[in-house]
Image: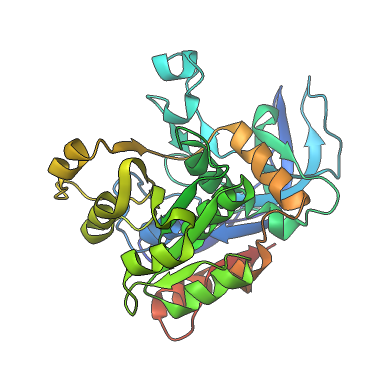
Length: 339
């Protein structure tokens, strides 16, 4: 079988390897689609602090069951699936209380352990999520980023239904968080400085969009939200400006969910956090139930992912996908690798 090995920043080698066999409790997948995310781009550029080389990428994936290992039930060859790309210890305090997504020894496929950028990929059946009829394999490879958004929306302490939620950042994760909040019954506004991303958001059904490079956000929130103020902000950018914008504009007693990835030492106006009794919570990734909820949102038509997928590349053109993403010559959102 073919596999794509990133041997160093900017270098991808295609190597032949024997087709693996699934061990007890495992399923062998025939991978069909791999989404490229921002963290993958950081690995390609040598800027990911928690990934070493060589590494096989691939964590936003879908495929079909090719072979079952001993003791596996509930799946059959040919089943369309995606998978939760987490390898956890099962022993630490987080795992024991059910918070395995923040396992002390967490490894994410494609980063701290080899992922699915290969024709065949063995993985524990416990990680698999079946794709129901009506959910395409391309959509299946988008379940992972949508699950990030679902998990973030669920971090809202009082739930999303009936609440006013502002999502800062209309990239794939911000779009997913906004759609997840809207699917849960929130009144949603999504912001960005990029008209291209905001247009994709509208094509996904997110009608409340604000270009903060051209419009005053506070004034627009008074126009767009019932009552004129935000109960919660979901920050999906990871910048000093946006996190402090969330703290300034959320209502007193409101909440800020931090999804964006920040560097160390970002200044934050903690005086406002204290004075306005603002709650802040981080949101790292997801649990399996977030994947299941994401699949349901797609199957029921409550989330639209197709407008996010702007480009497809053949497996052998993996490096060209990175050239497109990093080159800036052509606008793109989610880039999909097809096997």
